[in-house]
Length: 216
Image (cartoon, rainbow, N blue to C red):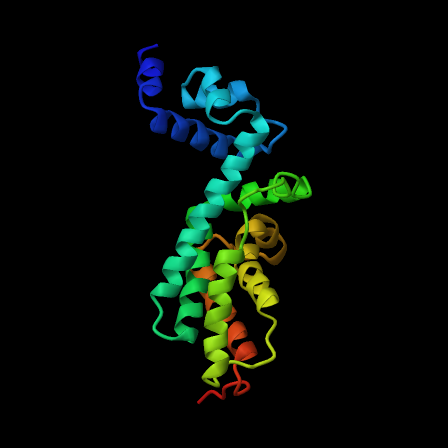
């Protein structure tokens, strides 16, 4: 009881506890299998706080999606700012995707559940989830590489963004099925390192304006 009173006196902390409990449970079980009672039980808050801060279970799921999107967007912008030139910026981005998806499995799981729902929580009117802010920055980096003659001029930047995400995402979204079918532990650090190195090679051999590089 004292814990409930304490969280009620700290609105930000209470909201964060509810949101983190929701992210954890939704990621494990999906939207339909999780009840509001389960969320408040894990968050150790009064049930009315969920409706006070979020309004509904649907809105709470949307907030969970928005939160994990915010997390990946933060690492995207941080990654490209650490690069000194277009190639290095994009390399840092791919490396950061692998690192983020490793540390934040809830992101992958929540997106998988939402895709099973055909993105119904992402298509709400006035929803804030969008890749446009980062896509615009990504486009500028690619264009700088094109202008310098380093990258091919015929690149479709939106599809390139999709390929960046997909090449990294598959190691985490399909980790267990691929590990079984290929007899390869995709959770092992060395395996992921080899995978990342090959992703980097594939991407830069593909977008380079100079064609494949020769070894030796």
